[in-house]
Amino acid sequence: MLLIARAQCLTTRGIMVRRGKVEGASISSSCGQGLHVVTPEGRTALASRDDFRPDEALLLLERVIEAAGQGAGLRITTGKIPSLRPLQGRELAADSEAFSKIRLDEIGRRLVELEAEILSRVPGARLRVNYRAEIEAWRIFRSDGTDVLFSVPRCTLGAHATSSGDGARHGVSTSLFHTRPDLLSVDSSVETFMRKAESAARLALDLPDAPNHPAGSYPLVIDYALAKGLAHEAFGHAAEADGYRSSVLARDGRFRRGEEVGAGHVSIIDEPVPGDHAWQPFSANGLPRERVVLVDHGRLSEGLSDPWSAGPGGVRLTGAARAQSFSRAPQPRMTNIRIEVDRPLAAPGAFEDYGPAEVRQLLLESGVLDRHPRVVFLSGYSGGQVNPTTGDFVFNCKAIYALGRDGIEFYKPAIFSGSMFGALDSVREAFGPLKLDAIGHCGKWGQQVPSSGGSHYFLVIDPHPDVRLGGS
Image (cartoon, rainbow, N blue to C red; front, side, top):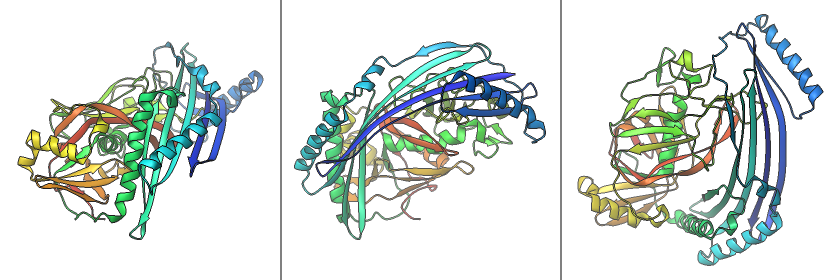
């Protein structure tokens, strides 16, 4: 019989400021253990407790073994016990003790100062500023001797600006991630956050007066945040091996390895990145989390798998299992996913240096505006979804700019939708280095886990009949 035991502790501190006052502050902590057993016949059962008391843990083990043994009467599907290599590993945050020294009262006062400074730069904006810090620790061991321990620090500064007009309410969010809980004392981080928050506030004020862009297929420019959304939602979820029975990237439950799905100079890669919002060095089953090339120069290459989905899905085992908590069943999930393009063109400086005028200048200097006299720039990412059975996606951006030789036109955001194959096949140019800090949370089967990723600063997508802007 195989036993996988998972212990988790998570501590979170957060505070939110609006109109010069602290509107909410919270401290929460949770911990516990989950036991996962697989019988010699290949039947599985899981159970959990939110404590670490030894006697109760042994009783829990007895009960979960008994439950797994009764699987035949419940007609639970069997599967072979996977052959796994024992592993010992430790990956601990260097400054984890700093999380216990966070003073929310001091942070609240600093957030009030930042809010006032942003509003002095952008009069008339309505703003909410927040800080969140959490440290999550996992220990996973198996009955074959595997024992891994890792901790993940996550800290974010966020701002949400709103405005009202044209009979609607407009909101624009932005955030900055760091591993240090004292990020408010890191001058470079605060400076970057202020630039992003000021830009969000100005955009929120401008949106009510902007017209709607006509629906249709256009040459597009998307930034790295929207590119991350495309990679994550359109390709990442479809590449998770536990969904191959219905995924558009599989046939008869097997991954369609080697088939062409995009342009030959475009690849999609998922891997854990140290210091990242979604970093995970080991899987929830105690395996090394590996780099996975989902699309290798336009062709399907690898899938995201765990010990139970790799064999049936026809892909190698990549240690991709994640779980929201010790009480949940692990599933193949992404960490940091990105789109890479061969031979990207230069975009000097920081991403925050580029507004629509600077993006237009890149298109002029590279000759893109010779090929397409008018290019539609979709700025930012504000959510979306995909149907992994068909490969159809629907995304939302934060703003639209039409860039042409004669100037720039500003529009309200609109739906960016279509076929993931059409979008990936139409990527032509990329500008700038990789930027992989587009953060969020990914939902799957009721579980939320941190996600991140990106691409080059900007991607150019040629017109395609299966990729549209606007419409319903």
